[in-house]
Length: 212
Ligand code: URA
Image 1 (cartoon, rainbow, N blue to C red):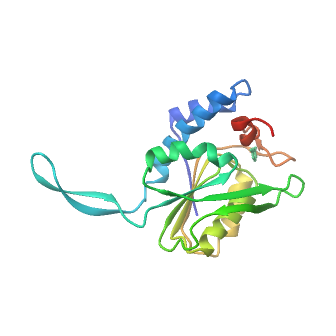
Image 2 (image 1 turned 180 degrees about the vertical axis):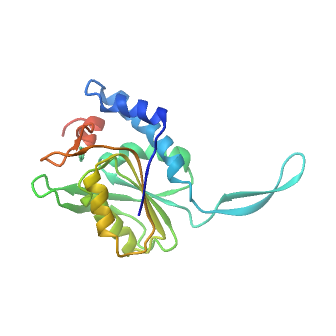
């Protein structure tokens, strides 16, 4: 498994505003979109392309375009939905599937409550959108779900990560050769006793959409 922390001053700047508890939902949502666009640039570094021949107004030339089958973007509901717009700006031709996952706040175990994904993901490059890699339980479950359906490779895009979550993922897939990449804006210090990332940004879903 590869973990890429995107060290870029614009990412750090936007993350800092995002972390600030004074930042309201409207600004938060806007910043999440912008951040995902920056992270997506790094995350799609290995997206498959194929050679094409085109005519410019001046000459015939070789180029390359995204190959088929199209990549699949999978936001994890609810908070991953806030990342979808920014991702689709970079990869507008991708197909979108949804996975609804919730974690039990006591056991911190993740379970699936909704899924809207192609049954067969054979040969598909998958991009999971989940803002917070905390315990790692949600991502392990989501990745297993996609691997069982035949995904070719998986890249998770997370705004923030905790070392504990990265370790959980590493352990879960250490005996598999399946290509997994995590692209994140920052690797924070740790998790607290409630499974929140420290310093983090609080509950991403609540900060995006308010408390329900
Ligand atoms: N989920 C969140 O929304 N925030 C955290 O800090 C951890 C998990």
